[in-house]
Length: 355
Ligand code: NAD
Image 1 (cartoon, rainbow, N blue to C red):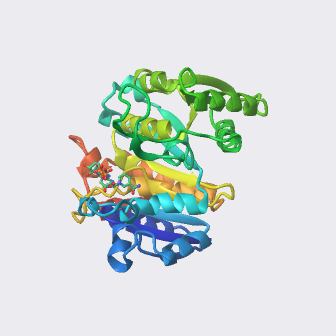
Image 2: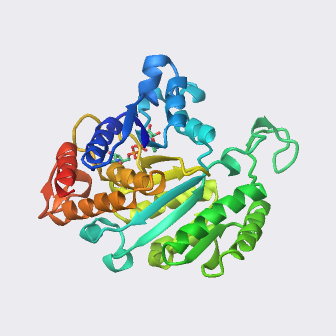
């Protein structure tokens, strides 16, 4: 089992160190190799995703990724910015399926901005298509408008598009995930306005014929955004396109209280995957030793489950995290009166001890 370890920038370095500590505490044999990515790689080699890092990622069964980015790179030209490393990895490895669970831990019910009864027991999975849609569609750019309200004015445009196979494969992923859960898929679209999403809806409905044991509902994205804060427990698996998924998965993550708790996985058709916390590099707290490492530790559990076929080890990590929370240990982001405040490394050590 070969793992490419890409800590990246900011708190990425601190939180990945804790996940590696936890993986090493398991009685499993891994080959782990570390490489720079993002701003850290730019500093060394002048590119956020150097060939050596990309080749390591391609040769591994899974990638454990921290986070990339820092405000100091905001003035670089777009293709040299740290965030391009993630887009490059997604593209080169064909990571089309993004899994973002939003689980509300009972011990953290009070950390959510929603009423406890709305989110207690929440366990939803957002499956976001990751390599298509308006984020990648061509043509795009700036030009002079020839029609519309202001002919002759400067305008910008993007292209929203999906091919049938792109929708089919993400729909299969969602239905198969639902089979292992509560057997319900909500497909989110904007079929009432967009041709691309009428097509999306039609194709998902056709794929559903292979999964008669799974319930399928269709929902417009505006309604889905509202239902997520009104009655989030109605959802089981949510499948949607790249842009709607980007927005809804962040909304869902905040239901649970802290972004520092949420793992994510991006998989290709060979189950090779990139595993990372849902949050960014948090430059505001980097180097202070206070970042919450649990999202990254839980991402390593997802890695064991989806790419390395080690379900039991995945469960051991998840249960160790639960135990640590039950003992009342909290990093600053999830701390509340009556609980014990700990730093990044102490939290990692506590998970190792619980294992
Ligand atoms: P962010 O997620 O880094 O931080 C948002 C807020 O959440 C900050 O106040 C931060 O301190 C806090 N936070 C985040 N993770 C935390 C953790 N584990 N423990 C405790 N608190 C935590 O988002 P941002 O501030 O908008 O972006 C900062 C940088 O990260 C930018 O350069 C952005 O482009 C980049 N980014 C990278 C990724 C990625 O690598 N996948 C994702 C999002 C943002």
